[in-house]
Length: 217
Image 1: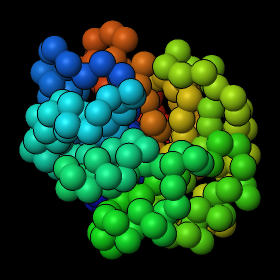
Image 2: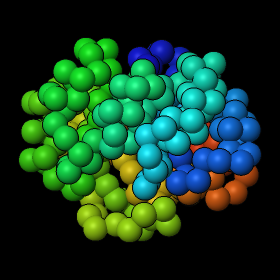
Image 3: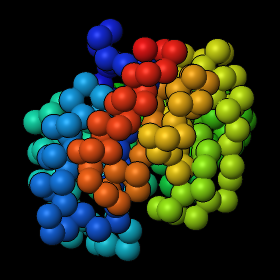
């Protein structure tokens, strides 16, 4: 993910796409990123059950929009697609490969994130394997995907106090419930349904207000 300028909030947004990014979604992404300037730092392209050619065709306009707004374009789960698109990075689930191998495929400048659920052990393993960030969650029930793991705030506190690698909080995060995550030390809030299930620009502004009103402002 891009480095955070000092003028930006301590905690930033990491947008995750809905599964359907066809139709008017590019226009919605443009609107969200325009509203989120200085707050949204990355966008994860997350599609399922689609061949690489079709996925690439859907990704390309979204990638261009992200580039225009200097937002990192991260591919979910698929190192080969990330390499094909020359994406800024890849996000790996626990079953999606090793960060070291992804680094060999994508190069030293790629941003590689790893899902670590509620596990300190998995997060430390990811860090040792060269991950650029670790993702913890779910912190709240999610409308986007079924949650098998529930993480607690003390996990964010522990990680942020001991490690330099940024941490991402994920799972059912909204402007109304994000405050404690920011206070606990989350560097990024990964959000999807809270943005795409309604007016995306209004949702981004609500997150900006909620993050900006925290003690880390």
